[in-house]
Image (cartoon, rainbow, N blue to C red; front, side, top):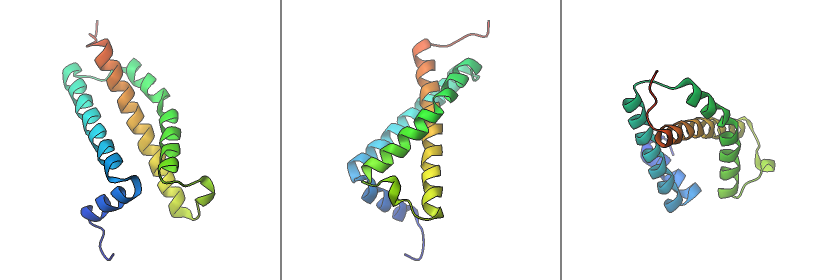
Length: 118
């Protein structure tokens, strides 16, 4: 593997997670992203209260994403070896934290409806 291409990354992720699970995660991410964009366009501002609550869920999302990846890949924390493994693990935790914040904010906005500034 001399070059890292988009197709290579897709193949690696399909191998790690399995084709069905990987594409299901991609579909869920697309739906949540579109819902988040809809909420931002509809409300035309970020609600500080909703954003604060969403941030409070970030540590749970980070932990859940790391545990999810550990379970799906049949790995354990004892398998973590070098610095690259730690960087990947922190990347997974960061992505899980941000994804959870976006999901929580979107769910709050969609269930509570549009909030006015009054």
